[in-house]
Image 1 (spheres, rainbow, N blue to C red):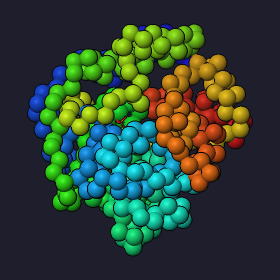
Image 2 (image 1 turned 30 degrees about the vertical axis):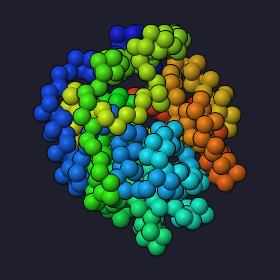
Image 3 (image 1 turned 90 degrees about the vertical axis):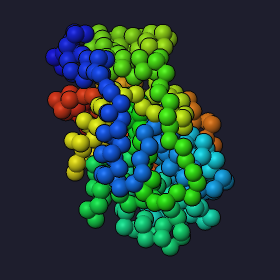
Image 4 (image 1 turned 120 degrees about the vertical axis):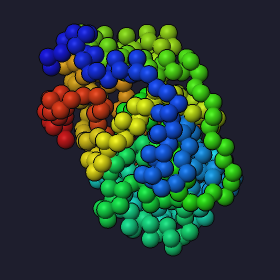
Amino acid sequence: MKHHYLGLAARKKGAWRQLFVHGSKYDLNHLKIYLQERYQGETMLTKNGRSALALALKGYFEKGDKVIVNGFTCYAVYEAVKAAGLTPVFADITKEDLNFSVETISKVADGAKGIIIQNTLGNPVDIEAIEAFAKEKNLLIVEDLAHCVGINYRDGREAGTVGIATALSFGKDKSIDTITGGAVIFRAPRKHEIKAPAKAPARSDNFRARFYPMAGAMCRGLSYVHLGGAMMKLFLKLHMVEKSADNKLDLSVKPAKFEAKLALEQIKTLKNEKPLREFYLVRSRDEVLKKLKKVGYYFDGFWYEKPISPARYYNKVHFPESDCPVAVMVASTIINFPTHYDKKELERAKEIVKEYL
Ligand SMILES: *Cc1c(COP(=O)(O)O)cnc(C)c1O
């Protein structure tokens, strides 16, 4: 890799733009109108993806209802289900696309009222089969677009235009990435009243969201001299950045204006998308990661090292490991790369990974 210096590591204009871009209240409005048209429903802008998903669920389900969740996901999804007062039931995945299938959901569907489709890493589920199953069992479909804005299902429909509600995340490394922010689109009449988030985010949260891309670029720059990790630790300690998994769920807060501006710019370009991240299942993952680190790759977390990630939250979930053996296997062998590496860098990393397939 050629970019050995800190200044060059911040080469992506994005980091500077995120720091200084100005947003107005019109940006919030424009984004809302755009989402309303693209996904055909009443739209609310939210603090993050998990708050969007929680509002989606609150709109249609009763307290205590069971909803089926992909058995390979992030803690944010679990948190959203719990915040809505619901009970998650996890369905195992297939190692080809990291999604549940009709076969695995039929094992846990008894008594369930809904299902959350996530199209893991941008790989579409078999929507026709799942929709037919959902109809038969009276399951309401909610689509979580954190990984898959702009992808199409195999029958040609766009992700986010199938279920009763659609949740978006604008979180770090997601399809739309403004560090925080999200949106929910209610595509069918709601059963319960939902108040639109109306509070602006705290100044300190705004600062952290603005600074994160620059912090990441600086750490990647320093990773070539093996100081990236230390620098990120320092930023975390000083509360200048926040790990994305730690972003709080809050149903009363809307995104920052500048985030709405950036999110709208980004989503307009997302059409007929390929998967968000390529993944590999490898032998001796620790060894592979060590090798990648040695040549200057800086990982602040890949997706996902536990069936429900990050690992530090895993114990809270009581994940049914024996019912989801494929998810457990995948979580211990998967490697996938953050979105901020360019094509050349990814090719180089792949050379290292290939030896371990
Ligand atoms: C990250 C993520 C979310 C929620 O995103 P936040 O904006 O971090 O709350 C929801 N679903 C999936 C599958 C995710 O990976």
